[in-house]
Length: 293
Image (cartoon, rainbow, N blue to C red):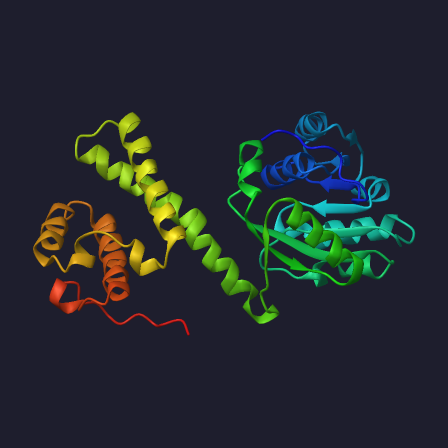
């Protein structure tokens, strides 16, 4: 996507953590007209590459990044967010007029409590997107973002979401972990499912260099169908048609691959239920699964 002109009045940005999420978010923000002015990371080479790609300055510490920018993103692993926040707070004076947010799905602003106590505004911006580095930056356009913040920081984050053509998603505190689990099911879960299907294609005699792009195209089409309408309308396959004979043939063919067979049964049961089919009549009778309210 072509870079845009600088966004007048937008806060300057800093990034602590030059991994996949930090890189994608920095590039997307830059292309939306924001200035990333400071970067630091435990990986000096990664920080250098990111800084060069967005025209930012390298900083030796997270505190130096926070001091350099109006709004800093802590794109570090979830388990060290509070640790990094505490280290910044311990080394720095009051950080009034500076904002710091993290990008973790299942944590709230309280993870940055140490920074709030020394005057920084803190919040959350979680992109509901599969970010795998620089190549993922354009995926952020039109995505959903969980935003948690107050006052001017909330306004700044919503302005960034709007600049990315995105939408806000509101998740109650009590639902954060379930929200994250659901996101993992779709993101990592679909990739794991794709990899298992590629292995089955190979077992069927299809070359891997054909299997992966072929199945990826199928996954892309399925996602497009799901985006266009409700889930039931996007369903295809024998469980949707009530084709017990084809399901039985699949189960026989998968007998040498018990793990894949179990996965097939589990997903076929969910598909049949979503399609309103009788699971037992399809030869898929299993123990009832708990339903999410």
